[in-house]
Amino acid sequence: QVQLVESGGGLVQAGGSLRLSCAASGSIFSINAMGWYRQAPGKQRELVAVITRIGSTNYAISGKGRFTISRDNAKNTVFLQMNSLKPEDTAVYYCNADSQTGSAAPIITYWGKGTLVTVSS
Image 1 (cartoon, rainbow, N blue to C red):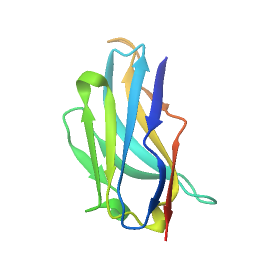
Image 2 (cartoon, rainbow, N blue to C red):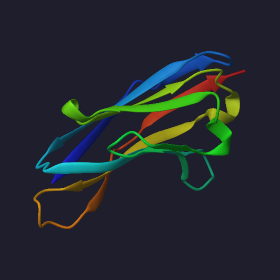
Image 3 (cartoon, one colour):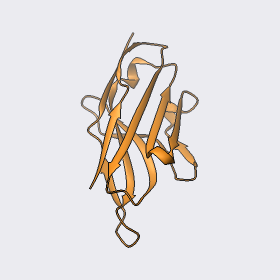
């Protein structure tokens, strides 16, 4: 099993910044892609950004130019730097990771429990 724990959420005014972190622990042989998703009240969960093990990134249009995803492979941690936050960025932010517990084990996607980001106008 792999556990993901997010941190860094909170209340911020519009135009402000937050940095989210997500640390993976447990029976980790390797972690491939890691990503951030968010779910606003009454809406479906949506992709925010994803990063591969070698650092290739992809962003949803909503966060391009404002959000930056990065990772520390040695610490099995992924980050999301969010700048110029808007009230519509308010959501619970979840991280996920595609991980294997062994070289022959299947790749399983694990999810954290989420961290709440609230942006006030």
